[in-house]
Length: 137
Image (cartoon, rainbow, N blue to C red; front, side, top):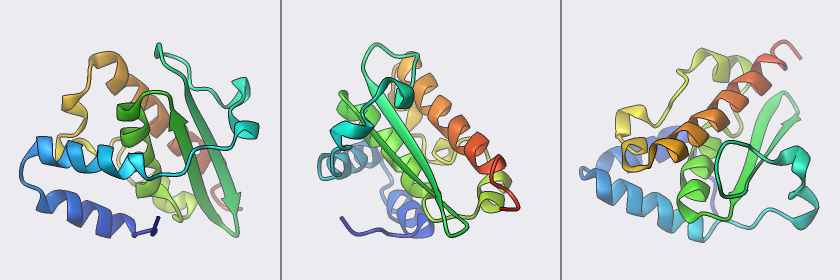
């Protein structure tokens, strides 16, 4: 899968006027996202708070942050994957300077049940925490 920039992703999503179309686009994108390798599907990488399994793996390489996620639930895989993509390749300082929910202006999380929305926001919080711990490195 090509790696568009966060600006390109946001532009594509903003171009889809209907929130349902945005959601469908994100879900279809998730269908093509590679699975997280079994070696990374560990309890240490699990995100708690939802009935389905969700894994989150942050990495810091060459001064930039990279994130991977996977879930048994396609909607969580779609939304958490999109949050990860919006932050991939950014410096820690860039991530810390952004708002806590990059999907809010697009209305994507309003389509989810409250528990799933909270889980996506938990992943967004982990991204910010990870970045904050790497500022200046």
